[in-house]
Image (cartoon, rainbow, N blue to C red; front, side, top):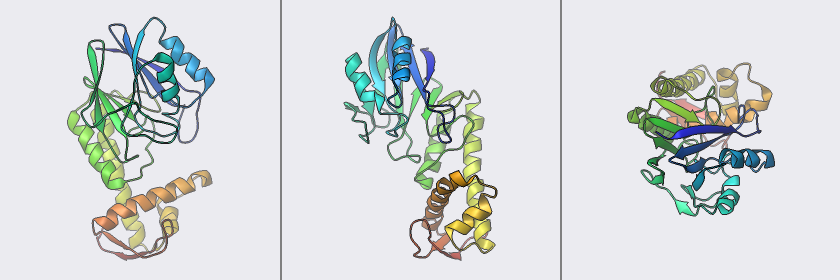
Length: 262
């Protein structure tokens, strides 16, 4: 099995936890860099140090968010290696596209792409034997922000079916009880749906009122994120026929009818 080294980027924050995890994977002297992160001179220096004595063969990106991908192209040019990703995005242009099931070979090992939309439409997890690198699909010590709740649930069940034994997230510590963690993520999303339905049943008529009911005591700095997440969850519930939404705008949509009893 390949050797795995984590290089932590110095970009801590409310949405990045202690910072972005960059992983150096090494097999038989060949190495690839997974999620090289934001353009920070100190972090790039640490990546170079971790590659000392190794033969780099690729740079790989889970998704195009600015805390994961911007360093990739410059590093790829510096190392003279291909840069892999699902699709281009802001500050990122893959030289080689990876679809679901695509492989990146390094030494005697192979990294296998698993398309996991939900956090973003372009998100990839990567399987290395029984290990799974989860990017922002699953994070250590936190739930994640999603832009498509239905796709996210499908992706959670998809990685559960792979039965990994250990998760290496894009933020936070590695997670050895992979099956339990994935199950907890699924349960959390189901519980959040039920909380939203209960709030609507209790008279919450706008997304703001749902946020007040579901996220009691929320840090004001996180309110916008919670508002977006409730809207995302409501779109899934609407598409399933479980709520009906009026025309109030993306973040002020009125819940005009509750269809399902929670």
